[in-house]
Image (tube, rainbow, N blue to C red; front, side, top):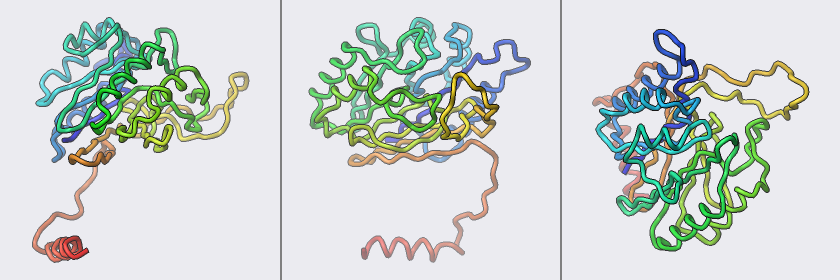
Length: 284
C-alpha cells in the first residue's frame, strides 16, 4: 500500500491573484507529478493548512482540483483551516466529537489522522478529550501496526520561530496517549514547511515539506523585538511524500516537484548491473 502525503498547500494566500495564485500553480504541478509518477497511491492524505484563510472559496477551489483523482482523498485540519468550511467542501471527511480525527485499517495497517487545531492558535493543540480518544483507539488495536498523521510536529526542530516548547500541555497529552503503544511505527507531520527527521518518545517522526513555498533553513535564535532581515520563506520547489507499507514495515520516500532530465534508462546495457544486484540479494 502506498500513502501519498501532501501538506501545507495554503490555497488563498493571494485571493486577488490573476490569473492564478502561486500556491495553486504549485498545487497543480504537484498533483500532475503525483499522477504521472509510476507509484500509484492507494490513498492521499492532505495533512493540514489546505487553505491559508480557512474560507469557503479556497476550500471549493481545492475540492475542484482533487475531485477527479483516481484514489481516495483524506483531508486533515491545519491551523490555517476552518473545521466548518473543510467539512462543507469535503462532506465525507470522518469526524468524532467535533474533531476531524479518524482511524481506518487497510492492508493490515491502522492509519490514524489527528486533529491538532485550536481556533485562534498558531501552534498545536491536543486536549484531554483527544488524548483519551487516541489512547482508546490505540488500546483497541495493540496488535495492529499503526501510523499516525498530524499537522503540528510535537517536537522542537531548531527552526526557532516555528517551534513549540517541549513541555507544552498538548505535547504532554500526546505523549501520555502514546505511552507503551509499541505498535506505532511512525508519526508523519506537516506545518514546518521543511523536511525534518527525528523521533518523539522513541517513535520515528518525520515532517513532510510543503506544497506552498518552503521555510528558510535557518537554525539561529530569533527575536520578536529585533527584526534582522533574515530570509524566512524561499521559492524552493514543492515536495511531497510517498509512504510505502509492505505488510511489515513502513518506508517513506520524498520527491521534489521540478523539471529534470532522465540520464539513464533501463535497457540491455544496464541489465548486467541489475542481474548482479539481484544475485547479491539472493546469496546474501
